[in-house]
Structure formats: C-alpha cells, structure tokens
Image 1 (tube, rainbow, N blue to C red):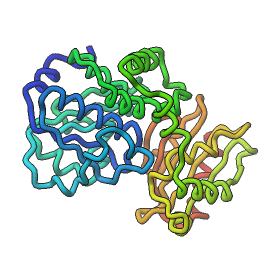
Image 2: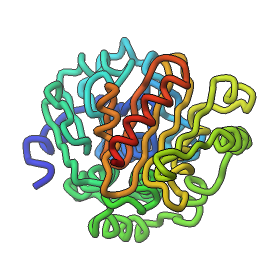
Image 3: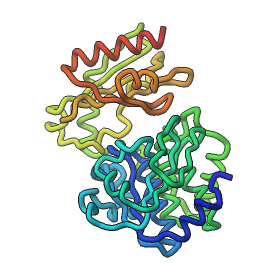
Length: 321
C-alpha cells in the first residue's frame, strides 16, 4: 500500500499545515502542492502554502495559485505539521526549509531516485511515478475523497508538465487511468492544455527568439545547446516563468538526442538538460553538482558562458559516445 495507516492516521490527526515545494518550482511542484492543499482543506485542515520563489507566469492561472505566499511571510508562524512535495533534499526547499524543519510533524512525497528523506517523519518516495501529481492523486483516493474540478486542473498541470505532455517514457497505464478520473470530475482539458502548452506571454515569445538565435549543433548533429544572457532576459522583460519548456526546443529537432539550455542568473548559469529515452542526463548533471531525472536534469555552473558551454559539450559528447 502506497500510503500506510500510520501516515494516514497522522495526516488525519494533524492540523495547521505548512505546504512547500522546491526552489524554481515547475508545474509538478506547484500543481501537486495546490492539489494537496485543496485535499487538506476538504478534510477541514488549516493550510498555508509557501514557495521560495514566485509562481511562474505560465502557472499563475491555476486554481488557488493566488493563495501561495512567499516563504519569508511565514517564517514566524508556529505550524503543527509541514508537508513538502517534489523535494529530493532539504536544500531544495530554499527559504521554506527553516519553517519545515521546525514543524513537530513532517511529511514528504517525492519521485526522485535517491531522495534524502531522513528529515521527514512520514515519507512516500516512488521513483517509478512519472510525476508527484500522480502520487497526490493516489492520496486523494487513499482518503476516499474525489477531486473536484479545480483539483483536477491542478493535478493535470502536475502530471502533464512532468511527462512532457505525456511524451516521456515514464508514462504508464496508471497515468492515463488517473487522467480518465480527472476528466470524469470535470477537467477542462482543452483549456488547461492550451494554457500550459500553447499560450506564451509576449516576453516568452521574444526570449524564445533570442534562445533559438543562439542554437548550436555539436556531437555530429546529435546534440544542441542554447543560452540566454541576463541582458537577453532584461531586454525581453522575461522572468523565470517565461522560460518554461524552452529547453525542449533544442531536443525536438530531427537527429538530436540530447540538449542543454543555459540561463544566466545571479547564482551562475542555470543549466537545463534533456534527452531522448536510452540516455541519462542526470548522470551528466551529477558531474557538475546537480541532479534530476534520467531524461530531464539540471545544475548550476560558474564562469563565462564559453567555458560553461565547452565543459557541457565535452560531457555530452562523452555520454553520446
């Protein structure tokens, strides 16, 4: 059983929850947290949702997204329980970690291989799950509750974004069984998928143009890379949320098997790596102090872009053989 009786009992008996997800949150992190918050409120719990970073523009339309607070706003609140989703290690909580750590009862649900859960009293880690959203849906079912239309949109955003709109090889039959149930409770698939995968902000469209203008092929055409400088983003008025999914543009080219995108941030070059099935970009990210999933991973590198580019190109060429 995915959720054992001690976890479910602790969840039912606790109150005043703090929910959080990882730094630079994606659709799975935010959608899962929102759906968990909706579940706990259905149970009559008091819920505060916090993030170390603002909600990306492309996810701000999700139901309840406006309820998410910056982590700094909740630093002095004495919570009875804390629950993090899609977090593989404490440092990934950023400014939410001190709040989480102080809670007398701590939960975590995640799907990253090798996740560190030593800090939690109750943990569910399922690396075989394509998205944490699928695990949060299973928690609804374990508590004999049915998601409403709003929770369905949140869970769809979580599952669809972490599966590349159901294109990754992590997708399994249970993923579509979950989707069927979300459709039955009123998911507006047409509108939700349009908002997630088709609609871009003006800033995002301009930034995409800049990124594609930097496109390079290497490893005999089997790999590509793109980058955006801080100046590029400033001139396009692009924020982190405007870059969502942009790395995939370099992978969805005939003959390409692996790609990376470098985004210049105050902390250094934020690297996003993607690959087709049969390859492992998590291993590459780990070489540089990062991590992630087999087909989608990331890290942060310091130095000039030329230096960063050469280091990553070399690692990718070795991986491709």
